[in-house]
Length: 152
Figure 1: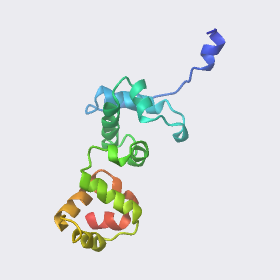
Figure 2: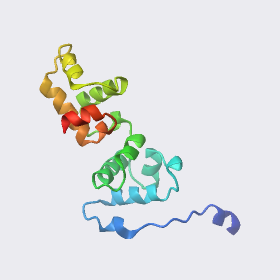
Figure 3: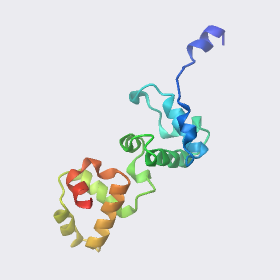
């Protein structure tokens, strides 16, 4: 490769050293942040596998590091949701994942409708509310204002 070709493939980006000031972030979270920062636009964002490869970590480590970045509000949860399928999000129980799937298909669901579903399963009101709490704390109810209001 001649010098002109190697210079053409180099991308420059500026990164604040602020990421190193977060004492609660491990090296994987810092590296994930650096990899994400190296991409110029959201339309050109890397896949989870690319983040893992470029950050020299496993896919699971990359996913966990993104969760920490969301927790510390260094990346938006919506961005995380777009990168990670909710079925890969190990913060959610299977009940919460199933409830989220139902809510995606029935976007104007109310708590009363969900409680009617309890009669069709062995779930009780408490387990539905627990799943809703999980979804809220993980940031998945942002798109469902009615349910988000109920859980608040």
